[in-house]
Each structure stands twice: as C-alpha cells, then as structure tokens.
Image 1 (cartoon, rainbow, N blue to C red):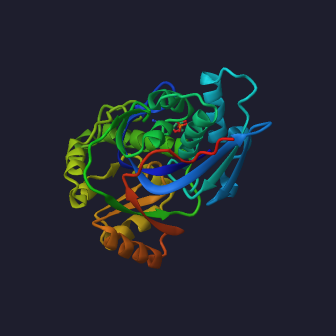
Image 2: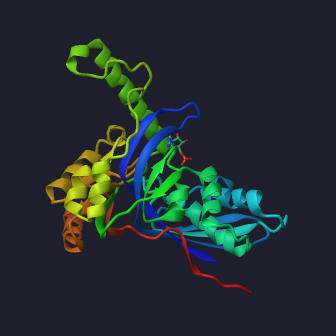
Image 3: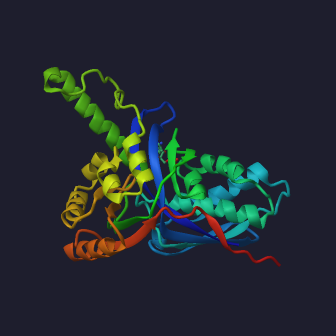
Length: 323
Ligand code: C5P
C-alpha cells in the first residue's frame, strides 16, 4: 500500500503566548505544495522503518520515527485484531528533514492512510484526523491538503476557499532547525521586547507583558483570505506573514541573505516556511518561478532550490495491491 503525501508552507503563522501544556495557540493558513514523500506499508513480523532519498540519514529510525508512532496510534485506537499490527514502513523522502515543511508529519499522515487501507479499518477522514492530531500538530493538515486554516495547536482545521494556482520557489538551507527551539526563541524575543518596552514605555514598546507573548493573540488575516479568494498572487505576496520568522532568523542569520536575494530577484513575497529554515518565495507565474529558481541558485544563498505549485491534494493512495 503506497501513499503520496505533500509538504506544506504556512501563508500566515500567527503565534500566541505559550500554553500550560508547552504548546502555543496559533492561527495559521496552511497550503499543501507539490513536493511529495511517498510511504509504502506492508505486513511484517515486527514494525520497522526504512528511509531512502533526501536527508535519509537524518530521519530518526525505529520507534522514535513519527510514522511508526502513527501506525501504533492507529492500531491502539482502531485495531481489534491484536497481533496483526506490525508493518514495514518504507519512506521515500523528497521533503527535507527539520525544514519547516512538515515532512515528518506528512510521513505520519501517509502511514495513517496506508494502514487504514491495509488493515481494512474503514476509518473516515475525520476519524483519521482525530488520530492524526494525537500524533502531531501538523499531521491532520497533511491528510486534508489544499489550503486550510489551522487553529488550536494547528490541528483544528477549516478548509479555505481559494482561487488559482500559486507558484512557489523553495530554498532549502543546509541543516535543519528544531521546532521547539524556534518557538522558545520566539518567546525569548518577545519577552526581551516587552522588558525593553517596560523600561521605556514612551518608546512605543509593548508595556504590559509580564509573560512571554502575553500581548500576542493569534488572529486570522482577513486581508490574506480575501486575496486568496481573488486568486491574485500579487495581492497574496505582500500579505504573507510568519511570527516565527524573527526567531528562525535569530537562530540562522544566513536566512536573511536568502530572503533578501528572493526579494531582489522579483519574488512577490518572501517568507520563512513554518519554523524554518526553508524559505518560500511566491512568484507571479510558472515562468517567473523558473527565473527566480535560476537566480537563487546562482546567488549561492541556499543548499538547493525547487519549484512547486500549491494547493496540492492531501495524502492519497497511489498503489493498492491486495493479495
Ligand atoms: O505537535 P508537534 O509534536 O509537531 O510539535 C512539536 C513542538 O513544537 C512542540 O513540542 C512544541 O514545542 C512546538 N509547538 C508549539 N505550539 C504549536 C505547535 C508546536 O509550541 N502550536
């Protein structure tokens, strides 16, 4: 059973203060893009994970892998036939690891769809999404695909109405960023700004915040949603926003060069994707995306460049072989 699953970019990522459980409430706009991993599952004596392709060596193997956690979570929640839940999970990666593109979450989502089919569970999309939310905040969106608003930790989804096709250039950085570390850096930057504001209230800083992020309530950009409905990338580009971007750039100052290079070479919008370090650039059309990809490659500001389109479909079965 083979399932193809897309990467995502966040067109908006509005992050609130840290919650008691270590997560942050957020409002985000996800878009799935045409950069796919594929995951094959087959019955086995014991569960194992084999990874090939992009960054294969840096994907955690065995029980720590998000895909094997997804298979276990599905078996626990839905499988009555005990002892039949071991699977060999083969992941062919094109989505880079720890890149802000939700590659690990994508592989977990693909595993859920594949095991649901392999084990004949017949779980609906919304039942699968519930299991997915327990595996990781971005896993439900990888099931859904398209363009969607995420709330809560990002797992509460509402499909968004959009028009047209969006042409993106993704600039992969060397190495990855840890999502918890980027969120922690965001809290620290906000706390420092709040402290500076308290010292100098007349300076226009944020004066009240005692806790990191206290003044930051996540809010959906209705302007961005209207631009997405219009299908005009020139309207969407300037409205892209990511509250984690200053934190990602503080941990990886080289990203500033990549973002600037994209803007200089005509990107309509330039943004760090999720917690980074991938940078996503929006182009007017396929031809301009191609030109931008060539320019970014020539500028030597990143490890590799790919051209993708959004919105792409969520996790879907591509091969179903039944004995
Ligand atoms: O849900 P997931 O396991 O993908 O989240 C990874 C980490 O990212 C969390 O442990 C947390 O540190 C951070 N995170 C967060 N707020 C969110 C989503 C993730 O702080 N809404």
